[in-house]
Length: 178
Image (cartoon, rainbow, N blue to C red):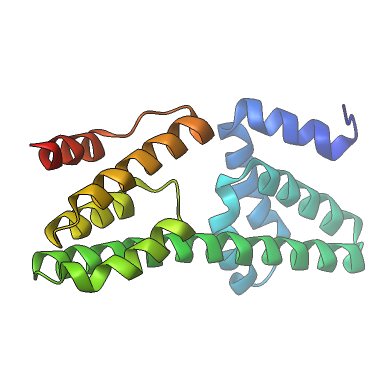
């Protein structure tokens, strides 16, 4: 494996966690960089790789290698942007699922079937959209398609993750079969 100093620190961070997090917080103070940079870097403290980078920042600041220091900060901020984009995409998906729940409760079942097919295709391992799709299909008088959707998601979860469907999916299948 890689035995470079950064990789050794990454491996140590993965094993120990908390001491590196404490050290990273101290590192932010030691950098004496602008409060804005410190605030932007704070959300990164949960990642061991980021904690190692923060330690690297401290060493570079001490060695006055400003060009490298600047590039590392740019890299860290780019990683932060990617992490934030993922977090925001997850939040957006949760809001979409909540809106669909509201529309299902309002009786707009048939209207949602096409959208839910797209959502299930885009997020094939998320169970909630599959539950919503099955419900929309069943309430639109399409029982066979609702059961086929259950079979599709059960197969996908089993084949790709080695998991059985969760209780909400199983309970809905049972209710549809009655």
